Image (cartoon, rainbow, N blue to C red; front, side):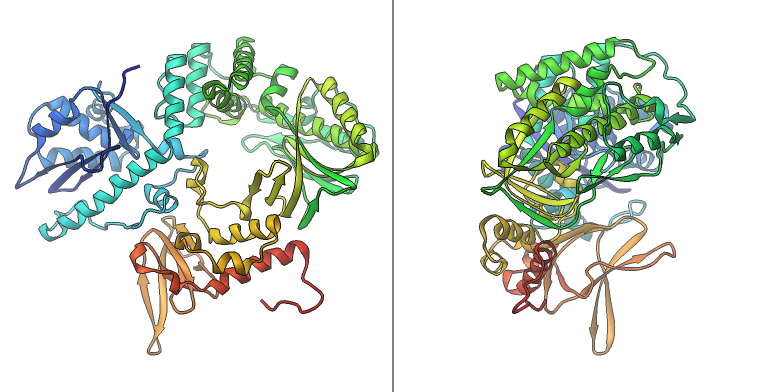
Length: 619
């Protein structure tokens, strides 16, 4: 692989009478370049010279579908280019679907460019959720989040060009900061590309599976038409045997169910095993518990058991594969599983972490209709079989006197009497021998839950596991960019209260990072966001940009989303005053209504542990 010496974040702006290209060195803040094409200036030749330099990596956000095509136009022509030509390219890209692009535009897309191109949007997307660059900027604590509204079909006024260039600086700097933040993922892709001789630098997790499958399997046969009906009785696994009346009745219920294309679902069924209620559906098992708190003590152990690589290992054990593929599919999957285990032992991140993504993709792609390995029957054999086996483990533990307090897709949480710990391991060992699957155990000192989608747990090693309201969305992982954040200080205060017995007042009143008090949201196209305030008896309405962040304050605006297609308007923060914080200079800690965050934290705490009977706190 070529050693990359020159890495630049870049962004292009293309209007009817003005084009600008900005490039900022990834590791040298002072190494910056701006190229302009307008009636007054034409930097085509120096721009061509810049992007022709050796060992160049250009980093963009959504550049593979837009910016790269415009740069390739310079390379393909190799001469001075006019605004009219650039604007034609830009307009055609924006106004047509890529499948409908004319041949001349496709030529630009597939031009053999001399630079290496990295597009970050695919690396931070999750499933079909693609965050905007501004949404990423919110999580990166970028100081200024701004939209620049201009009609691209009209010439830009000379007086507005400095603002456009200023706005463009922000986009390049956000791209640069995003690259540096997720650089470990990029380095992992570099190493995987080199090891497996595939180019996945700008490929999302899902796309890595496609590349690996294509590399090892070769050409896929045409997939058959998806079945109109799936009979659940044909999807049940082999090698299990229920013992209790409740689960035998569930088995009979499942044998009577049908699933129809394209949604392939059946009516979920709640079933009680022990004291816990589980919901069984086509996609996965979930217990239905509400607010509660557990701690390991002298009488009980709180232990989580997760099935290692549950779905992909189940595919191997049950020999589940897309019906139109040969056993080579399972051979490749086994190779990946073996490679990953070797990577764990060798502490090799390429095999340990990279191949985890690939293995999950082998399963997930079977339920993605555009995929070459799409086979809903195989997919639901895995999800329904997974639930059956997990329920058989739950049943055996409950019959042995061990309370299973939670179950979710690939794992269970048990409250184990200390005198039955050896029995717990015996039951789990027997289940592993029968299924050929492996359990991984984690002991919890504390488990706190608002509901099945909102919980936190502290392991016996002091590590934190969290979901939903307990997640600090500003503690960055690449998955977090697709979510809004809602006052991260509340999550931090919940951690401090349940983990360290620190009152919310102490955590919140001592917080000095104003970003932890912020809320955010990106509004979709059917709404516009407005801030309203009553002044001199009149409602003053200010339209806001698409992506916004704010703090709660005692004196400020009320936020609303106004529906643009006749639907219902919505209050963004009910009964709360806010100050918009899109520019960090507009807010400070004095403005924060800390009592709001304290009260919201106590509401969640009381929902979990109940309100005290005496001296009840008024909130």
